[in-house]
Amino acid sequence: MKTYAIGIDLGGTTVKLGLFKTTGELLDKWEIKTNTKDNGSWILPDIADTIDKKLEKESIRKDDVQGVGIGVPGAVLPNGVVNRCVNLGWDVVPIEDQLSKLTGLTVKAGNDANVAALGEYWKGSGEDFSSIVLVTLGTGVGGGIIINGRMLVGFNGAGGEIGHINVNPDETLTCGCGNHGCLEQYASATGVVRMAHEALESSKEDSIMRSDNNLTAKDIFDYAKKGDALALSVVDDSMSILGRALAIIANTVNPEAIIIGGGLSKNGPIVLEHIRPSFDQYAFHAVRNTKILLASLTNDAGIYGCAKLVIGGE
Image 1: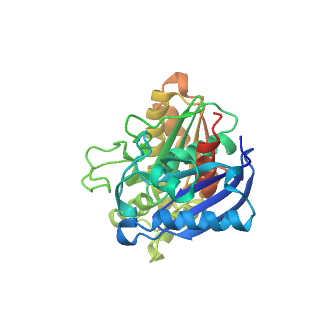
Image 2 (image 1 turned 90 degrees about the vertical axis):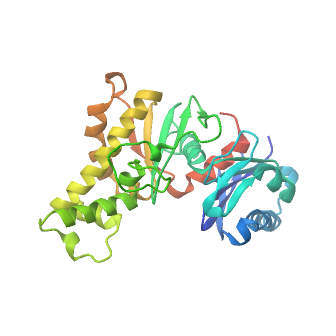
Image 3 (image 1 turned 180 degrees about the vertical axis):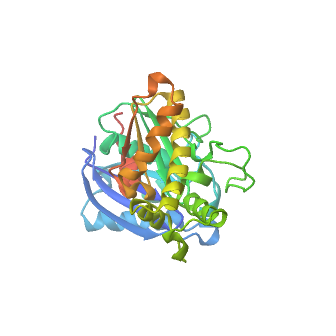
């Protein structure tokens, strides 16, 4: 085993990078802008350039680097090929081969949510368990599943798409994926705001939310914590839907723990308080003891998981 590894969390606006010891210690982290011009053709050269500069600055020889792990917002096939990333401008990109040629380093790629789950499993809230499910609640809903230390990526890299479990077949609004009634439409930050506006329109109940012209999901949770009844109702509806979806997942893969990450998880215990009753109601009796925890690595889970891709040793 060599001394260093690099983890890269590639997003639509920002590339987050981490320099690690192969023992798991994060030495440094930094960011660059994601340049999506020309169908994203500059993204990998920019990443290679910033890696070269970091290694030169730290006086690290490439012979001492175990490799580069990279997480991308899309499906990654077993051969290291990305099968379309719309928000990066990519169609089919052999990311492992291309980045390896640009850096001269071994490269392994994975779906961003899957590698975030690997990060939480390795050095976060999941480190005491062998099987976990990570659910990330942000603009959308992402997910990753680790079973006995291994990522469940699926036949063509699309495993763990928790956000697109159908929770309401009667929904008329369209999800970003093109379907209707996906979990993402209710349990994401975007979904919570939508549900709040619908509640305000359908009710005459007094609420602090009525005076907020730029309502965010954080605002709604904050108002709920302050005792605003309508905001609390929105939070309960959203998290109860999530709890039912998590019960379905737990019934299927029986993890030791379900870990809640993403921006909404920063609202703290109120998230878990409104997930648990619904989870217990719909979970099979043998899985009701599944622990539900908040993520601890937050925005760093991706870079940790990507480093673990090349360090190995699950």
